[in-house]
Length: 261
Image (cartoon, rainbow, N blue to C red; front, side, top):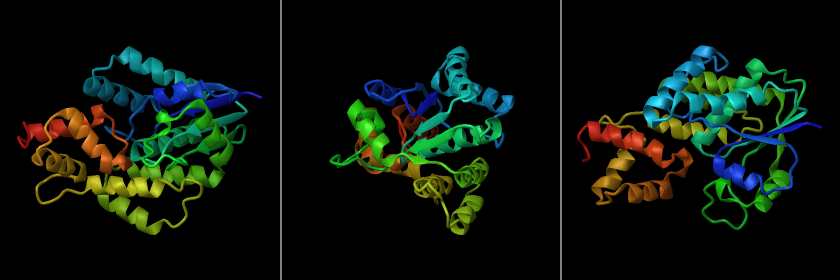
């Protein structure tokens, strides 16, 4: 049987290679929680826009970005019997999961492979679980054996509906969607992630969203260096799943508004 594993990052891939699990593994090299989006994730224009934004924002070369994502998207076109999606609880991962599932729904014959989700919110014995990238191969196998869930057609419908709402970047539409949606299927960590996203869509009296205000508060508290800012932010806001490069986007916005130096 041919098996594909799509993992959420290079750190998880490193741990995955230490497991005894069968199958090919590729990384979902995207940050769909940031930057421009559109509903049709399978279109050429979608990936062209993403490539332009990624290369401009993170100083990545178009060739490198396209090679990474092409490998992942091409794998989804292969006739695998089983696909395992390894994504986490935070907004970064949940949006990537929505995108991957929506892409599969648009481009893949979902009646062919059995598709499973491995999505941990925590890990036994790890008080401050930050993600699968910190787990060993043995620990990843534990997740595979104990929380792996087969996704249904309903789950793909939920993911597509959530995706179509998310890409509008409209706070009122997202708020209505969250209040009207009672059933989340096996995507049980999607709602809290989208609730966190709603907070960052809303702007306060200072013209700042939740993340910008949080970072400004940290800075005004006297924490000035980037590594210290990152650590303080992560200590309370891991729901966003922001890496240092993504936090830098928000710090730059504050700098442009002359709120920090």
